[in-house]
Length: 344
Ligand code: PHE
Image (cartoon, rainbow, N blue to C red; front, side, top):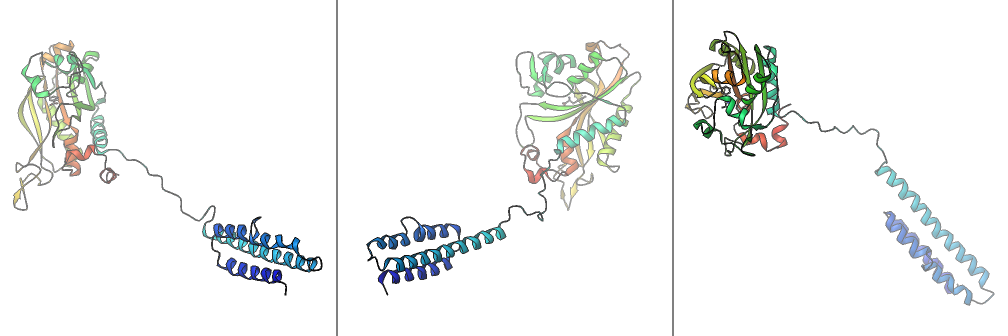
């Protein structure tokens, strides 16, 4: 047997063994280049064909073509096998897969409580109004019976923008803004953000209030009490108590702060033999400031002297914490999805 014939036979044998072991398209491409490429093993052998004696040329030429066809067939078979295998493992589109759930947002607990609060008062006939967060000193203080240098300004830790412009420290400026434009009788709730230069575990520089006020003839503190009792009943349930403590605000007279009986210890002040953590053993929790609108406020907005009315300002964060049993104020502003997704 001619040495070239032996070489060809050997080439096909090793190609067959190698093709067998190929598992990936990249390996197959390497195989093609090495055996069938222009600088490949087969071309290397065929290059010797020219130097052969003329009598050997036809026979060895035919053998070379056979070897080439055999290796090409190995390549084609493997190529088909790999292609089919790929289709099986990774289909272009699997129609049997379930659809992907789009992640949908939820209302923030603060938004929920604000909306629910407004809805409760709207059901009692209150209108809903919103006003600017950047407020004039006049509406935030002056019109509310808090003149410049009044000591009550100290309570507010105000962020000033300019001498006469500030971030509102409460929603009460809405009392003056609405009354200035609208004649009595009226009832309005005004939800929104308020700002105080104060930041620790129980205070954030921005928080939320819902202001409420009603002005008419012969409005009494009993009306205020009745409206707030109904609110507490709707927001927290019928078993929750409400009490008023005397307090002071320059824009109401008389003034009060209202507490509800503690949600955690049911007003008992203790739980499992220990003083209640939430109400600190008192059995009560403060949720709002309120009172009868001060005559000086009516004077500032040009209302008749016989006007009577009440006003209150609810702390939204406080109510949300009590309603949902949240013990850390910071939770509201960390945007942790593990927290936020609990309010479905
Ligand atoms: N604006 C007061 C505060 O932020 C609350 C309040 C509102 C009190 C209305 C009386 C009447 O503390």
